[in-house]
Length: 192
Image (cartoon, rainbow, N blue to C red; front, side, top):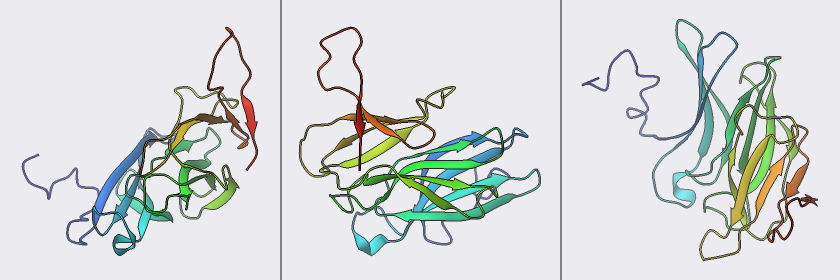
């Protein structure tokens, strides 16, 4: 590829004056790509570059179908896309405003779509009332329903303590122990 306008171009966001921040790529049941990303008006944090729009681009075999999903408040909010065997789509990401607004992360939520990203419903808010922003929800390889996403928290503007969290497919959140003083230890249940 030597020119921006080529067969690999998903959408010309440059002409729309929008930045694109890639979050995840998955494949549907037909082996076609689905891309999850955020668009915004600029790289600086703060409200002047709102909205930060979570978007999916799905290849249908002939063209890219691009749909906006939800918004959050930072270009570097990070989440994962899941395409379930039954065709449902799921996003686990920090889409809700956290204690450090306009910094990476926020409060975690789980979103579901049963129409390949045309509409989304917030299935469950996973965290709320946190001291630090949560971010970087990642899908474990070959995710088991009991260990469906893993992420951390941290303060957006200063050094801080950080905890590791995970949730199951139903959205039940647990915190890993900060001190491991035995070969096996139980995580703590997180209640927002």
